[in-house]
Length: 371
Image (cartoon, rainbow, N blue to C red; front, side, top):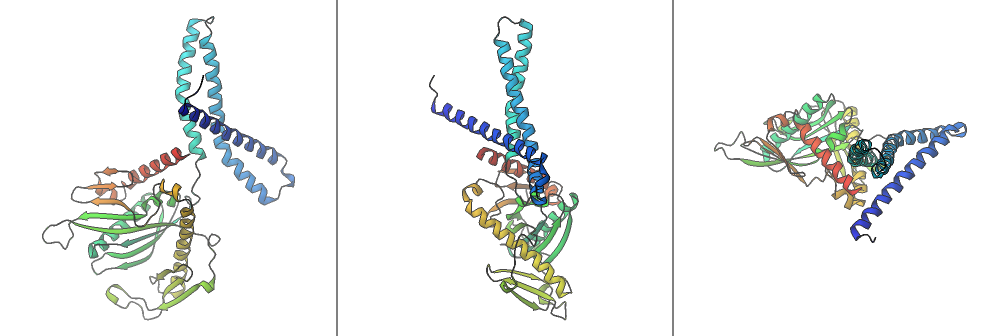
């Protein structure tokens, strides 16, 4: 019987999937054999193979379960087709057959999830940067609201939230605020927050009750280690100056503030929160390292532009990702078309997980489809 074009493609895809799984099983067995005779292995090679074996073991267990279920389905099919068998036994086999058949897609999905490439930065801490965008003082007040939202969200997850830099306005808004967030799975959850956040509400200064639209930009950068980014002293220009408060008010009588410029990329970082020039320089270097690491990640992403466009949370700073509508009490994430009428819960940090988890699920579904 000749297969249709679509059937031929499905068969080819199925065969390719099974071939890939067989190769994984072979690799897992080969590593097992090599580790069993590891006396001649160097420590670094032993560590590498042990890590790969551990990572493969989870997916191998799922593959073996999937293969076992398929083999059992074949046996049950033969039993059902045998007209000489007892009728009650055939009916029982039919029930088991249908149950196993329904489970196969679940097992295949579990395997594919285990095969999805993991973002190497997911386990890292993060540098959070929030900046006021269009909208003047109202944008700065909104930036401060967002910064506090992430601070409460961090508290709820048991993360440490260290404020590294704030540039306040006279009315308590933030032109810019930077924090270092440390804890378990910080970047994995916060990476979807990068982008332009928009607010629609009546500003405190508005006398006629008109709704204004303002914006703030959020950037979430994976914290970089010194081994991730090599920074040469000759590539840095370091300026020191006197720290100042809102409106240019002097808050320091010594040149303790630090501005570091990375000449090759043009990235500039300023720090003035600490009274010590040494501490400000250390904080500025941490932020610079994170920005350079993010710059390197974006360059790699650009090389995989087609794949990047298929993913949620790309971190494109020009992308309007979310709108907070205060009069209607709703928050809409435009990337997945999700609207939740629980603005107070989200801005207090309690309800933010509802959006984060929906974004992560959508990201996972798109990557599964691509796989």
